[in-house]
Image 1 (cartoon, rainbow, N blue to C red):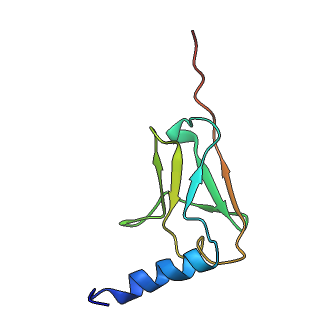
Image 2 (image 1 turned 90 degrees about the vertical axis):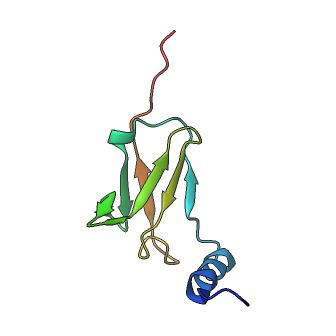
Length: 88
């Protein structure tokens, strides 16, 4: 109630209420340069000008979506990547 940025807080409440996932846990560690994100069949570039559409955290294997279109209910999101192979 005291926060001046109500729009961001309400957007998060809306995403939580509709079960839209901002974060995707990858099954295996990804080679970061190989990651491709598609939203409704179209490639979503990592950066769109100064804005970052998605980010990948290597230690946690989590891809975070930041693009408003990707976060809409009903969109199909496909993430493909080459896994990092551990050689012993």
